[in-house]
Image (cartoon, rainbow, N blue to C red):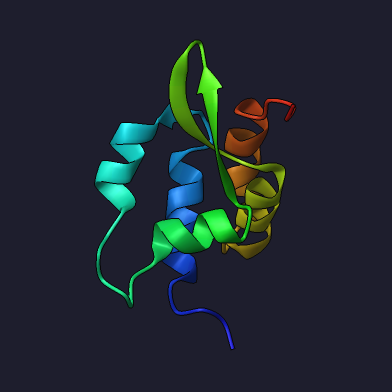
Amino acid sequence: MEDPKEALILDLVAAVLSPRPYAEVIEAWRTSCPRLTVWEDATEYGLVAVERVAGELCVRATAAGRARLLARRADPREWRALVDSNHRPEA
């Protein structure tokens, strides 16, 4: 059975295809609700990562996150250009 939060997790991955400031992402996605662990699940599954970009702490989609986004969206073709245009090799 698919995780009922999967759509929300993929929304988070899509939101960070280009690195975004950590504070901005946490403000939007972190929750204290024990049943809505989107941020926690995305990081635990390795779909998003926190890194420094130009001295600023940022969140970005990982290769695993981009792959999952392409595999799970209804029409992966609509996401491929966006994913490919924001791809940056991981260190």
